[in-house]
Figure 1 (cartoon, helix red, strand yellow):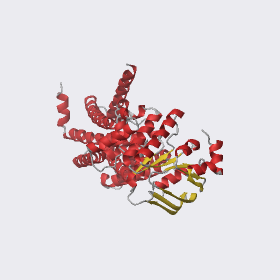
Figure 2 (cartoon, rainbow over the protein chains, first blue to last red):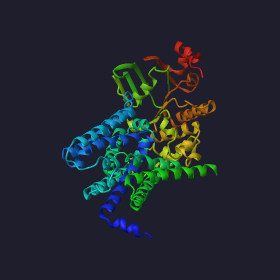
Figure 3 (cartoon, rainbow over the protein chains, first blue to last red):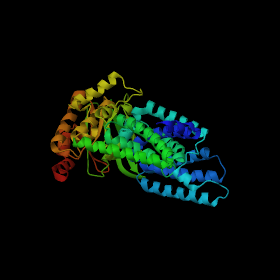
Figure 4 (cartoon, each protein chain N blue to C red):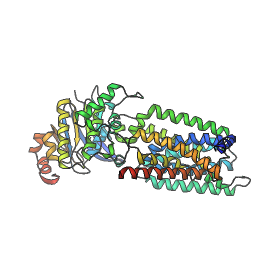
Length: 273
Length: 233
């Protein structure tokens, strides 16, 4: 019955994509809890658009994509975070502006440059064929760093997320934690983007946290549940995409949406009983 | 030896001075109430005392033996906290300043002790967002107490509370001040009640109009005018 499962994993590009994707899903979910609770969900979306623009430019100039894209997106993440913290410029409006601009740059560059044989849709909606073994290695490193960040600084992540002014007033360097979160989110978005697509990657940041919050009421349980939900949803999504030859990124998003509805339904039932 | 000394301090937003000529000292065990109308510089001063805003002129100095991470702070509740998934235990323990990954048993006991001090020990396993306004304030106050043994700053601790819960909050704060000897600096709109509990009043209107004991304050012009009806609750 599970022959297809072994068959799926026997393709090296498939097992590579699944492993890297699960690590990226885990990172996105952990970082997502903090971002969603601080009302920064849109940053993930903005960063993926910037990533698309940067990736397009890298391709057009013949540069290796990741070493160019990652610093650009990190820079964008730090700028977006500053803008959101500055009450004079509306953060959400700034993100909208930067996002659509980057998308426009990306589309223009890709369609003007000749000799690139890549179709735009694989950038926008992802492709499992792109994952190389060096991408996998980078994803694993990212996973290690994000896990260490959460394990070592968990209490401080909670304090800063729950109440930034209290954290600052009692002598914590909140700017440092916010910047670290932004940098890790940027790398997560870039690594996940090629698999999930620039248009779909932000769902990995937002969905697991929201799904977990349907049922969990402590920060620890939300964090753990979001991580578990995210990894599970990614695996199921990939399996479904393999079975039905459906697009991978879109399948993962739909499974995430299904999980959200399922958790919401359980919550409804719980509240009625 | 004073805990905090403000010496001719002025604070600015976007290069514009919003509060100036602030000189006062906070000693151990003091209960200071900062009053004034909206936009009078109360919150700015509090941010200045917490070193969140640097003074544009003059200085704010912490006394010997008091470091920035030994100050307890009860900020106004934020929108984020309204639907934030956190247990009361998580919130209170986040007040404990510790570099450890896991808290020691002593730290955890201190968190529970502070909650018990505020007669809210039974809430420890509840979900923070499901508490009433008064219960939430107690939990946040317990968190602030975990962070300090000397000085507590509060930004309108009774805002949004019904009169009964507000009165209980004042009693609790008085108890902390008296029994624990913790100095209190509080922003308040409720001047009458504030003058009842506080030892000193600092009345601001872009600059201090009054600084002295609560009894003196009630005798003077700004005190009578302000307590007499302008902001009567």
